[in-house]
Image (cartoon, rainbow, N blue to C red):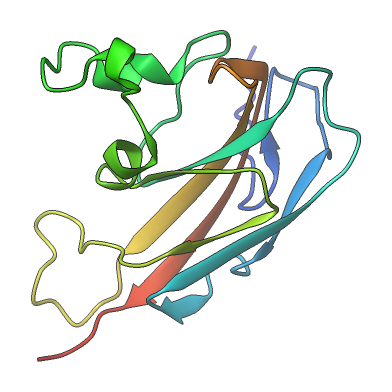
Length: 155
């Protein structure tokens, strides 16, 4: 018997096989759109799970795992002490991770992907949105993603 490969298109929820969730629908940027910085990412959210308090937007990196806390991002980083309120919004933003209670976020800059600097082709970037509770622990298994291209400023 052959294996069935399932692919999930941009802007759709990634979840356990044969399960979909439309609680969050990314509306901007459009899938595979070419945009300029700052990149405006927005979504519609409805029927969020109990306990969901904030959205976390990851740029070009995998999100934290279900049940994992945002502190995992700073694991092993001696400069980020939880008792001092770290990781805070500035710490996360420096790592292209944005925390918001709203249904949008402005990403001021999207770095060129490694090895592609100076090329005319536009690299594909991805943002992934997940939900966390008030303590920063991921709620649910779903992720919501969209891929897009960024027109880099020329010098």
